[in-house]
Amino acid sequence: MKLTIHQIDAFSSELFKGNYAAVIPLESWLSDDLMLNIAAENNVSETAFTCQLADGSFAIRWFSPLMEIDFCGHATLAAAYVLCEQHNIAQVCFSAEAVGKLIVNKKNDGSFAMTFPKQPPEGAEHIPDALLAGLSIQPVKVLKNRQAYFAIYESAKQVESLITDSAQLKKLAPLDVVATAASVEYDFISRYFWPASGGDEDFVTGSIHTGLAPYWAEQFGKNSLSAYQASQRGGKLYCEVGDTTVTLTGHAVRYLKGTIYL
Image (cartoon, rainbow, N blue to C red; front, side):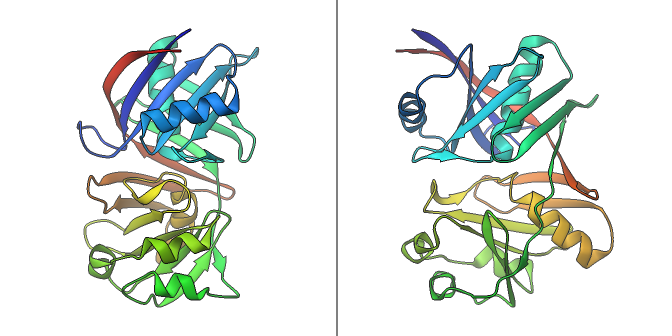
């Protein structure tokens, strides 16, 4: 069996920035074990597998090198890049078991606007000791949603200089951790840590902005925001917060196209 594999740098218009993802379009699903083995062999933060449905939309599944992930924004952007090019279309409708319908539109400037369900964080009734032990700087507030704990900081400098203890943060599984603060250059910045699910720090995490954007929209009293994920590679996102959805816009660029031999 031969499969075509694409590697795309998402949330960037330049190679070697943003977050890379592998995309593998399928005619029918492979076994879960085989997809996980492929993702582990790829060893990128996520590998997206897609299957076209009878109505022309696409089912999508995401795998880290360690496990299947129920929602991944940057790999969705990467998959939309591949499918828009492959099928000569400007809109892709995805369906995913955990988060439902995801719509991605290719814009005239080559960027992609992804509309996702809104997942705002709420106050955490209990702050785990492992969370505080895993962060070198203590946050001023802790919130959480279905995906992660939100560590809110007073300044962007604190987020940028934060050191984490992955052994402690791993104890928070299945939740990950995002550190965030208001910024001068952007409306807000963040860093994302997920040692229990994929790696110590993710480069750019689209999914968490479905929680970050609603939080900062409420703080600033506006629904259009610019964001920067301050990882080693860095990534820029533009967020539009609606009543029930968050639209994230970013660019993508191809790194490779190849063949998997099974």
